Length: 349
Ligand code: UT7
Figure 1: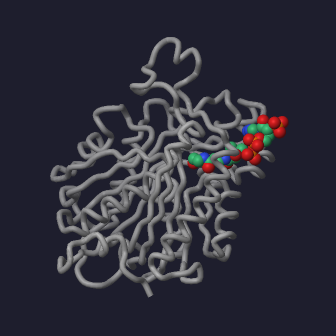
Figure 2: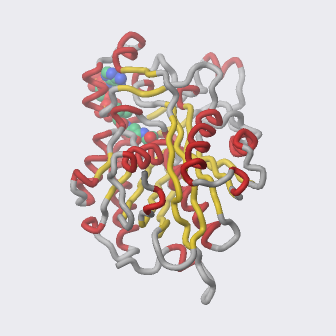
Figure 3: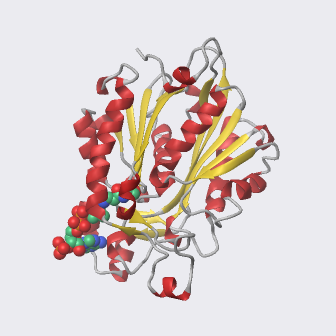
């Protein structure tokens, strides 16, 4: 039995709250594969090390000239078609990304133009690996308060554009991809986004970051020479934080809705490392068959992992009307996100 959610709690008494229902899901990855065997030729690593430590066999990467908005466009167009809507019915676009096409204009503007969503406004949301959970809950709130009816929520990243392919500690982990969801307003009781619980902890900033290229350290010959426009990560610090916080945030969102792990039908976590997902799921008490893991084929695509994993799960018949779906993510910042969903049959295959 679900009790009052963040949506109902935040509304003025007596005001009707609309449901935000997932009407369609889609994913897109670029065709080019970067396998562990390819990486063995680039840095001092082995297929065995990568598979054992991360669970990744291969990841997809873009060809030169392909940007985040290009991947986002492919996923968005499939989602629009599956939802059976016209692009100009969309009134809100949120693009969660850490690798925007350019710092400005934002990728939501580029995407809006590429897909012809002429009635939409929108923005980019930067929360690294938690970006999709933040974007989904933000769009659901906009629908709940009654100001928007149809939202396009995208998680997309071209991580290969900020990865140092001479650094074996990071280059084996990341991949490129995009996932998209169409959220629609619905009246009365039924499936939809139920609740969210998010946190940030800025003290974790140094553990995972791209040092240069922002206002703190603008691009210069020196920043390029020192390879400061690439991802720098203290892997073990992030690993420990991710396991602890995934458990904490999942327990919190379940408790605030009067649920336990036994009530969850499917757990779709950010795909950063197979060991993080399995260890957190064990601690929460989620049976292995309820846990979606597809990192083997895609690596860590940052804001795109959750919508890609959801799309995978739906296409494999693992999601049915009324299922309780738990999303969670931990990312740079640190950012921590979770979303609880009652699954809608409309988003099925
Ligand atoms: O989505 C954003 C959030 N990011 C994450 O959640 C990432 C969290 N962290 C991780 O997934 C793991 O910490 C990594 C996969 C990054 C690293 O795995 P680890 O088990 O924590 O390895 P480690 O950093 O403790 O390194 C162990 C050893 C080291 O060698 P020594 O010092 O023991 O001789 C590393 O130099 O493994 C070495 N190593 C590698 N060896 C072969 C590090 N990277 C590689 C590599 N191939 N690619």
